[in-house]
Image (cartoon, rainbow, N blue to C red):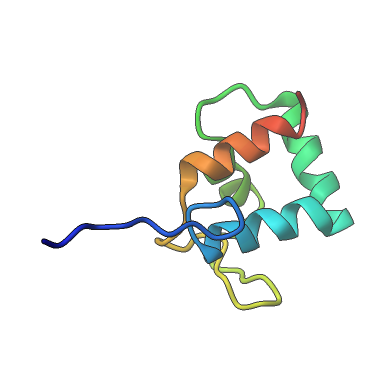
Length: 86
C-alpha cells in the first residue's frame, strides 16, 4: 500500500513558500513595501499582484528562492499578505 504524505516545512506547504514568507515578514524594506501595497489592495490574489506590481517575479531571495516560483503555495502567501493589514 502506498500513501502520499504531504510534508510541511515550519508550518508552510514547503520550504520555498516558507522562505518567501520569511523574507517578506522579516526584511524591513520588503515588509514595509508589502504593508503599503496591502493598505490599498482590493483584489483576490494579493501575493501575485504584489510581485507583479514591483517586478519581482524573477527576483530571488538571498537564499535562492524565486518570488515567482512555480513551487510556491500562492494560497498560503495570499493569506500571509492579508494578515499584514488585519
